[in-house]
Length: 402
Image 1 (spheres, rainbow, N blue to C red):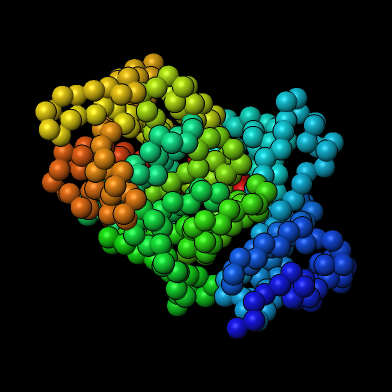
Image 2: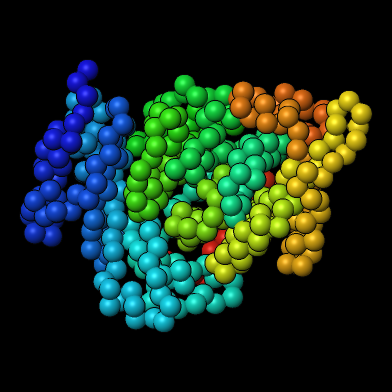
């Protein structure tokens, strides 16, 4: 099979016409980036932000054109737009953030602060509809290296063990790790009966979607924010998740474009913050927590990971990274403390080998710790969206998506 090239993709895109003036998107300079990795092609197309929401047909036409190129098995086209500088600077302190379809200030269109109970929305933004997903829980951290992905995986398995239908989304576009952690390094999504959808690979009864299924594990993803968010939106929107009680989202570390866009575009039920007991980790965790508060996403609580180490031979307990910091921070910030997870070689080995500890040792102390946290999260889900048989409540109260 012939491999796709920049030239072959550009030629295909030159057949995509902008209905506004009848010119093709290549000659108009709308094609801002083409990323090719083996048989997967990602394209970024720049559009006028005022027209963004009306150009879904153009995006789909570009995606079909790329998909028809010989050698392409997966095609993704993301629309990106940049606000005029005058508009971006019209509000004091306004600054741009990358989104899948436009850039907007962190306070939403025009820089206006959201009112109580509202989510700030980017200019021209519409939510990503996931009608079959009852709740969405983001697992976040202020910094990397605190075990957020390991926590996401084991919490997803613990929720599934309670009889919930669970999906798992890897939102860390630049550092996807879930394919390895779930034992799916060689897996690929399959085509769904639903037009334009793909079926995420499954492990342990959970459907998992990650950009890691489309790129080599050692290949860096070198994309600007809008392209990364566009890819993430398509992973969400174009996946056939089936009916889910909860979608667990493993967020990237920090408080950047993807975190902001997820809270603006996706009906997040609540956020879980993971930290180690160290002061520096807790400082960053506070920043992450405050970001969710500013965009009116409920914080379900804090988890202290790597809380202590217990010697398997003598039973002696060492507080390698200090102890109790997350619990104290939770009390100070007025959010629930969800529990402690120890520092243990079994947890790390299970993640590396694709055998999460909640699956490999379901009756062990560590699995019970994850299970106790999952109980609290499940209770919050039921409290916020109702029991499984109840109609799903709106998680975007009083907001007009225009």
